[in-house]
Image (cartoon, rainbow, N blue to C red; front, side, top):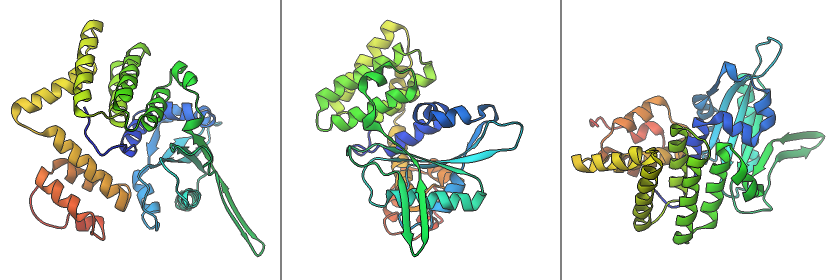
Length: 320
């Protein structure tokens, strides 16, 4: 089971969005889903997003995504950008941040930019959807689509076959069960059983489980209890999906004396810290983190606090 700082939602949302982007749009922005030519594929423009957001004064852009998609049309070469931000708590400058990313993306590519904000906070009254100002005859206004997770009814989510219905359920339950481990345990186990009954294939079950496992994290004792339940359930159903990937992998690592799970956790936390400071990471930084040993990961994690640039974090010549 996952070990990580309590109630950190940005990493699992990013992972699940990238894994099931088509389902994400079908669930949260069906108009765009219907207007995209999916046969032409899509592309996450992480490098471009880093370029347009890094100069921003506010670097808190952990959940931004910029995606290139192709519109359905009459043979014309029409592509547009979709800017997505998932916001877990109130930010006074949120609307202006959406606007900044929109105009910088448009300036870079000269293509329409669709804005989509997923508000995953707990304040029913906070619903930013526009940035505007007017002064001396000049008016500027930018409107974007806002989706509030709190608006979804639990019954509707339970009946939906879209993977993001379960994602939304898990996120909302995570918010509602803080400091209630027993209640969270029951809800988590119910959601995991639901994965097997929803017609998802093995890979979908594994990806969705990892999201649920992250956002609905449990104390060690309950986590081990749940692990036992999962193994017994999968043996009975003859569906060794989660246990074969998660539990057996952990046992193999323990037997060899390798702390791969801890290293992955340290690498993920370091990646999170770097993205928080410097925006989306370039390929060379991700590769360096992936190859690093725990001492280097720890050293870089300390440097993040004071480093003035991404390069400065990795400045030493010590072998990793």
